[in-house]
Image (cartoon, rainbow, N blue to C red; front, side, top):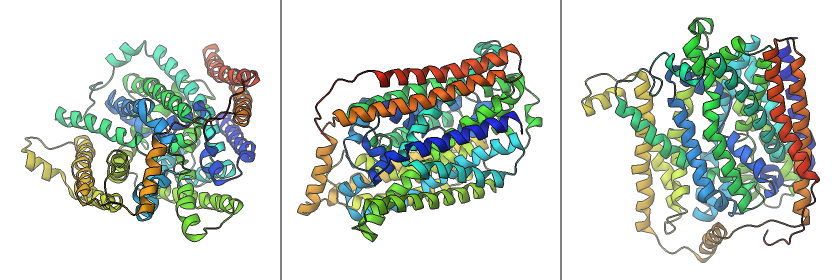
Length: 584
């Protein structure tokens, strides 16, 4: 067994142990799907950050960084922009919805019919995305350990499902925080190595093959500008709607939700410059890269750097970080979807009088079923090897995910619309996605705009994303606004439900008291001890035979993790002043 395989297996055992340790925190569906709404801001902020981070970052996104330089950073800065608006306004509002799943808020706003549309309409987006992320991870695993892609997808998906099922959202979110630390520590270490091996950022940029700022394969700069504008529009919608509010439903109160968004924003600003320095280095100083990793193409840029520049054992640590990232992202396809199915379909329609024990059991069974679906999707995507992982992710978001965000975003600002405005907007969005994302061909646009040169593959891919998003803003959003013309006063029961939703939205939530303080201390203590163990484990990797600089990188990486663990342990030992509970 190589040292890299040993490191990955040890990390897997560690993650499964987290699921087992946090199982006692789960006694109800609220605990299982959102941690009972009792989590501290740094845990929630970590999971908010990690849901936008997966193995795709090291494969598809790293491949785009390798080929087109700085352009990939724009996508992540758009994420940071969305989190910043979360911090300024939306995050505390989302927590104040006081629901277990985001679809409950949609039922309160648009009624039961729209609830079912969103229950079943939203699952394909998150399940397909999780399958893409699982496939991205399998690309790395198969290349490193020489294991068939299909085998990798099946066993990796099964292991990730096991951890999510064992401990529910407590295990997932707790592991998210530890995984965030490991990922940041590993990538910071890799970035430092790339910086010094490359003679500084300026020297790497100077030797970059191609246009570092806007990338290659581009004839029309206007298309690139359009792509940038609508990527920011898309990520604003993705981050600031009640469907994706599930990130903040786990926070213990409004202020903790706000701080969580601030943490995610800061991490998303500094992260890209750290993550993509190694692929930029590969482009500049490893011209033989393409022939050595022909099967993976540019998606192997990060792997090439770690295997050729970093010390022995670092590949295993990077693989562990990638497993962690993918597990966090797959949560949206497992725990979140299972929660929506149970709370918004199984309980209200199939089993209205089901006990909490029954609901938790069925939740775990549903999570396993969702895991099998994700594995199947990963296997299918693997059969489409000619497609770009980068393009797949963006197209899923713009063609499937974005139409669902419009009614739930506008619905919190435009109150007087009929209940059918929610589900009908989804139908209109489906037609818009088909016309602009599938039926539209390059020659249609070239003839319409009178372009003198044919669109390159990159330009067409960027243009499809931009045009699809623009069409949804104009047509799908326009349809929702137009439904105001058909508004009539709702029945008394529905009006009371809508009124309660907006009352919750505008009423701050403050959760304090001795029970919450004890739970806060337990969170800090348990995670602090686990993270400290992980830090010592990484430092111990300095014993692997390497040159002094290689050993030093492991010490640096482990120290970053260990320091955070020690700070949490110390925080757990401090006496907490007793406070009176103001609101539940």
